[in-house]
Length: 437
Ligand SMILES: NC(=O)c1ccc[n+]([C@@H]2O[C@H](COP(=O)([O-])OP(=O)(O)OC[C@H]3O[C@@H](n4cnc5c(N)ncnc54)[C@H](O)[C@@H]3O)[C@@H](O)[C@H]2O)c1
Image 1: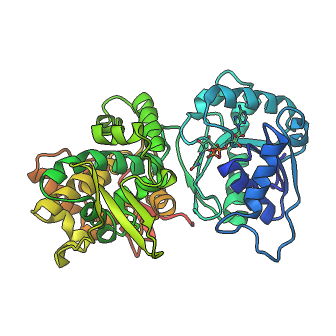
Image 2: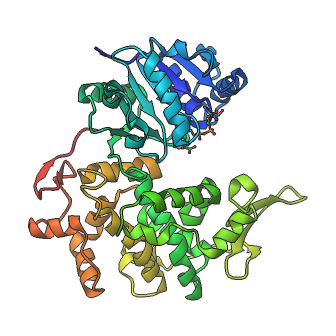
Image 3: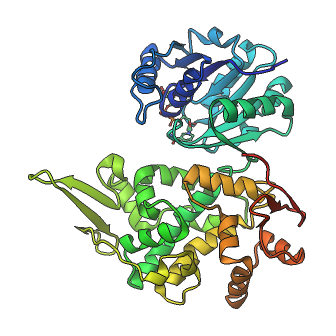
């Protein structure tokens, strides 16, 4: 019977695997790190030692991590409490490895996959019941040592006591904010965050026709709503259009029919052209923005005009003072309409996804705060603009009322949280205490 986690095997020493292994080693666990070759595993160790921001302080001694290969050294995982798979995102490759893990691991150990979006049910399909009970998804965010969010997704056969031990370890020892997610496409953070990004890319093309610019859109999709200053395009430049394209394809294959996200899974035409030409984002030297160093060592920032398809000097945006707050959502001009169209839809989308992706609003709000660095989650934003204002605008626009707003109306409540956010409205229309973080 597993009591606590003190030894961890990480399979895959790439970006995510090295981050997870480094964090566990930093917190005094015995760590085994395996990859397809010893060279790849050593690269992972280098990544841990030289990570930016650092996992280890310069004064710390070199972490003692046992390295090896997946082919020759898999038996090194046999006494590990937690085996975390973080290899390439390919179902058959993951299944093949997990199958081998199952024949070697000790009784009582817990297994997880760090997949970004492959359903757990597909990974464990037809596997022994012991594995179906002991395997979860642990979806860490990149960079692992920085991002607080960890989504844990159990299977329908999960051993809840074991999951509790893993959750406790990840929150108390690794310092993660654990959110309970369900086995649905993209889990919680990326389901809502990718809807915001992909629908935003599409809706922006109409907004350009109304005079908005990339710079202005990023100014609107950031400070007024308490979102990071990268805004929409700055964030996609960080992620890369190639990754966004894969995310869209995964959504197209796995979103339930009728989900409004299905309207936005393909990149808009111009963005597809950028993808084909390798203009992906920061990793390719530029995407929607690019920064170049001039001969006099100063930096020049440019923006890619998606209408003319030409690079132009970055034009610092200025917002009307009344648009600098969340109230822009209700403004009747071009900027307000764009915010309603993108941010309003995203909030309403989130308010329609209970119980599909989460049993409560708290997990959704935490996922967006801890995984996307929003200062408030969708339901906290709703409370700050007053849900009744949102409902009125939806009614005026003849738009459907999302499930959680309807529940709020039916239960005669006027906010999703009350008593200084110590209680939240549950999916049965009753208030209950907000669980500890
Ligand atoms: N990078 C992210 O932002 C991010 C965030 C959350 C989850 N994920 C998920 O985490 C997992 C790992 O992603 P990553 O970004 O660390 O990728 P990565 O490419 O940095 O690392 C993948 C590792 O898998 C190894 N590998 C390649 N082919 C293999 C094979 N056939 N068998 C076994 N190992 C093989 C590689 O040597 C490499 O070290 C993926 O499932 C990914 O979807 C990634």
